Every structure is written in C-alpha cells, then in structure tokens.
Image 1 (tube, rainbow, N blue to C red):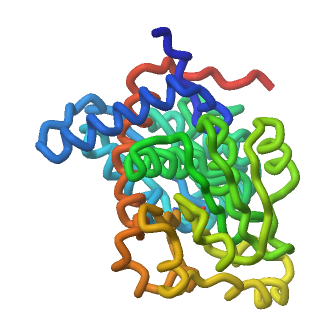
Image 2 (cartoon, rainbow, N blue to C red; image 1 turned 135 degrees about the vertical axis):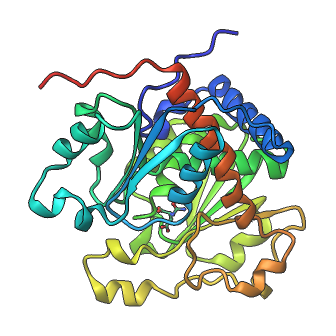
Length: 321
Ligand code: NCD
C-alpha cells in the first residue's frame, strides 16, 4: 500500500480526506496509547521543540499537545494570551512572529481568533504549522480525535447516524468534522440547530456533493431516538457580533438526563468541551457519555500527528512573496 504524503502543515481536515492515511494515523494513535499504558513510548521527538502559540484560551488542545510532545521525548515552549504577552502587543504582525518563532522551534501550534490565520502563518513559516483553531473556521486536530473516538467507541467509522447539535454556524470543530465525515460510508447526518445558528451553506453543499444524506431540524427530542452518535457543541459566545442574539440563543438546547435517556442504548454522546450548560453534569454518569474519553483520546491522536509531522516531513519552504 502506498500512503499519500502526510501534509507538511495541518491546516484543514480537507488535507486528510484519504481513508488509508486516516487508518494509518488511527493505528499509530492506538499503538501509542498502548505503549503509554505500558510505559514504553519511544522517545522519538528527543531534541525537538514545539512552540504553542495561543491568541485564544485553551485547556484541552494546549495540555494534550504539550503532554503528547513531552511523552515522546520532545519539549515545548509556549505563550498563552499571545495577543497580550507576545510582541503582538507592540504591533508585531502574525507573520513576523511566526517567522521568528520558527527560528526557535521545530513546529508551531497556533490558535488564533481570525479565520485563515493558520494559512497566513503557513505561507511564511519555515517549520510545520498546526492549526489549533482559526476563528470560527476550522479545528482539524479536534475533528481527527472526534472521528478517532467514534471509531474506537462504535468499533467502526461507517454506518452510523450522527446528530450535530448546537452552534453549527460558529462551531469550528463542526466545520472540520463535516469534511472528515466524507470518509465514512453509509452515514446519515441530522443537523440540530436553531435557525440563526444553522450550518453555513458551504458545508451543506459539501455534504450534498459527497452524497451524505442530511436533514435540518430544531426539534431535539424528535431527533434523539434515531442517533448512534450525538455531537453536542457550546454556543460560541465570543463569536457573536449581536449580544442580544447570543442571549436568545444561549440556553436553546439542553441535553437533560431525561432527554439523554431517549437516545438508543448503544449511542454515544460526544462534546469537544468546554461545556457551558448544554450537557448538565448529571448526564456524566450515563454510560453513553463519552466526552471525557474523547478528550483523553486527544493525547494519542496528537502524539501520532506530532510524530508524523516532526519525524517524517522535510521542513516546508515558505511561499515566496
Ligand atoms: C473547542 C474550540 O476551541 O473550538 N474546544 C476544544 O479545542 N476542545 C470547542 C469550543 O471552544 O467550544
């Protein structure tokens, strides 16, 4: 089997629309999880440095990337609130910061509030850029771990009915996941959102172009009994330009314990986290709740991604201006 070349930057899940590539990645993640449990992880990233540059807050993405790097023998340099604690404060452009950081690190994990920031960074970077979320657009490594979780929890990545619920307009994990779903066969998607937060047209068009049957609803109770996977998202407060609209939207859907019980017995509940009130903590004890396991799976997927991107890839060359 000839594997397609692993991308030199991780910017969008559209770079991962190859089933062999994904199966290889998931296999590597499984092997790392196993080796981690046995204390036998190979120290293949010894001497390598990952720079984690966050212009927006993060818990899971940041800690799981840092832990993944360190578990494989590498180290991390980082700035949180880069907008305040880096030279961005003095007016430095993202491009200049990236060029500079690339001189100190072997890869850069970037989270930024602007759509397209990761692409801008990749254009000037001499080292691989990993998109840790660019505004409301994409969050590819999250969606890779989401699909990995489905694969692990259901034992397959085909033949399932998935409900995507919440803020489908601004939820970047949803957008990256829509692309990845084109790798799965015989699936069906129910988009559960209030009309102002429905999935943007480009992603609906993508589903249509890939012959993935979907329908849109704002009736959560009606949708639940048909699902194998329910993917819940937070209403993305920070993206709203109209605070009144946010106020109207903020408690739209709540997966109460009673509602969760109407899901089929074999179903799984996912959430990229953090949650606000869309999944009350009383649902955590439901055996279908898989979101903390999902967050944990981020560690093995990110080990596999870092190994691929740092071990096997020649450094990308910046695009000439
Ligand atoms: C998500 C994000 O940053 O987009 N969080 C994460 O990385 N797990 C989801 C969110 O913030 O709602």
